[in-house]
Length: 419
Image 1 (tube, rainbow, N blue to C red):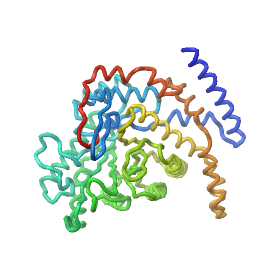
Image 2 (spheres, rainbow, N blue to C red):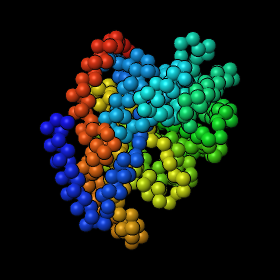
Image 3 (spheres, rainbow, N blue to C red):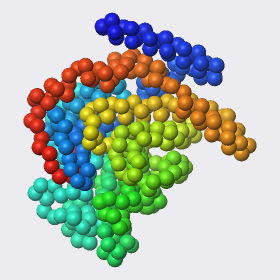
């Protein structure tokens, strides 16, 4: 350990002790919070370690992963430096490989696998039928059958590598009034999804995602949380709603949606990111960290009320102008920060102010938790897990990006599209 690192650790421990004294005056035990931080984990997306793009252009970064095994190497760096990302979420067919080889590589890197993600929103090379006009809701039964079979294949791969969930998002919809029958289209989707659901192992969960628009701009088959809830209810007890923070109209109260889905037992998990205008897929907490905190306020509140409440936490981002590894590390830490801040809410005081209709003090109770700097807790938890006090600084010192850039062929720029 260098002199600088020793000094950094000594300063961290002093900050931790000072914060512990302040929290003790509020009746909060800092060691309990550190244990919560150490136990927290969020899955990283395999596709997130590549450079994303817009509808207009994509500007590749240095050392982009060539295949899933390069992606796992990058994900392992994030896990080692942050101590907060123990699992990886795969996307098929992008990450299709021999399951035995995937398991072996993950074991070597100390990683596990989170939810599988199917792709019927684009056409894969050699695919017999196109999804241009839809997949699970397509008017052609053969196209729907192809989409169902793809999802069943994702389940089979997931079983082989130890996954326990399938996430299904479709871009199905319409771009012109009258192009599709809203009713028949949704009926076809439910029929196809019932076939996917029937293929789930007993200990698996099915997550369906809603999205207001894109790539279909006039209508989308699964356009909002209400429709998503109907799907989960229709399919059965293993079906749940996945909430992507960027898949809502501007100014929608996402934390209220979270509360509703919790209340009726259908919140499955999250794709964490941030947005300014739409599905921007920006780094979590980069634009509206208070909203991220408010979402976790509902989640932490449910921990004490709902038996067996374990929503899946996953990141879903597109990194266009930053090093993807750095963005995923900072996002994981921001998500963990919001979780810990929400754990500081004085729930007894908050309930009292709510019952008394004291709007100001209820809001101030939340703000008191949000304004608390929990960085010493997060950093010490990382250090004690063998991770880094400052993951981004450690990553930059390591020279990892330059190393993989020398090993991996440069990728030419191109038209729009995500990784």
